Length: 486
Image (cartoon, rainbow, N blue to C red):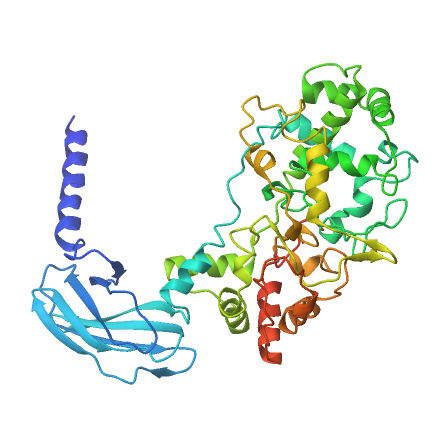
């Protein structure tokens, strides 16, 4: 008992010592800094380049003594220079000050420096701050491109979306050549993992060359429409399409169903919690749903842009290249790029005329979205059909209300820009080899090539060579620094 009392007394005494000698709480909410002898808090209104601002400051000494003086300054460590103005520090009361007349004359990394003196001793406290070149409105637009990655959500039209057994089956199917009519082509033929899940060709080649470029299936789960023409309204319906295309995999519902029964019957039952049904078309659709469950897991990693975007939101430091920041300013400003390439996925999910010729070959025209809407409506696998697992049809609004218009002729889906540096060549027909070619295309856009009845969002950007390079640097920053799929 005596030992217990002794331990309690020592703990109580230690608490009193800590309370009296080691704790102080400045009477201000804001950014908190601490040194061995002091605690300081400061706050300011939003800081803009070349505009005077003030700081509210509160501090206390851990010894309990009253702070005697405070000096405030700021400088740019990387450039080895400070402000052009000397702030005035006014005492507002015990431990309270207001610093006026500060001005940051250029964007970049600054550092506040506070020197506080108490009882003849002085502490220096510093805090880094990044002054953005972007206005408050521009910052708001940039923040709309995140955060990344978005929260995962199940597809209600696919009853096995998010199920581990279906994901495992879908992965096997993705790399299974015997699903194809010839036994020689697989999904990964065109969607190669080591090429960011596309093929690097101008136009896809399964069993024959087709008319369009292979889009990556990375981040495919975030689209509203699938295919360059949007002829499919779910990832699982889109996954069925190449199986049946004579130029791609040249299979049939009967062939696919037979392959599942002979090769993957056990895996099918684990994924769908039932034996393989006799209805070949139902099996075909389930193959699409398992493939979709796997593809939903293919989400690209975080990028230098994401680190910058999050740092901008928190007003903290990041090593985002100055050229990328200039490119971002063009992207959300004079380039008008973010009108179509909007949000965390960098796409509005809809369709546009890009000024790229829509001839697929001699005597053949690819009408894009115009024909895609027709195919969507006639597709038995769309969200209004019997294979939708969501009785409420909660995701079928677009399919129900999409309107076929003459202006849809020659429109193609706006692709997401994440991982764009790894998915050359570009455009719906793969006609532009590099990102510089794409930026130059929009810089020198021939408005005569835009469809006469189409939208008029696009105008020639008339960028300088330096602006083109800056915009390319931004686009390159939308890819992870290390490709986690290699």
